[in-house]
Image (cartoon, rainbow, N blue to C red; front, side):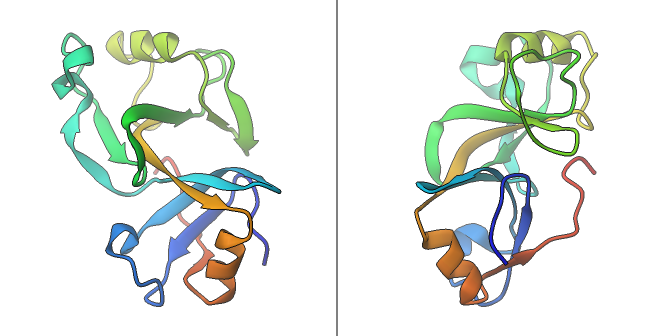
Length: 148
């Protein structure tokens, strides 16, 4: 099976990397250059309002998106009616968009944990890497819900 945008993958015991132990990853971008995704099932140790830049925001869970670029926040959501400019990546799932709108909606309680996931960092694979990891049995398609 070939990876594709919007696919959920679950790490198997064959994956010898503690970063991804029991990880479920949503692929948000897949093309000839490689793949990008986010770990959707590992909570980060701090909440949004515990980050200096968002200290006036509501308490909101953050997720450990992956080991790459852990200085930035990324997000997926299912509310294109509230957050503009997101890119559709699957059935009712959007990647990115206007982050200011997302924060405003979180603070006024129009967005809940069942609408949006915010990540610190992401996962990235160069061309052929994810396919090779899948072929060796390190990743398998997952049935989990992204916004459970």
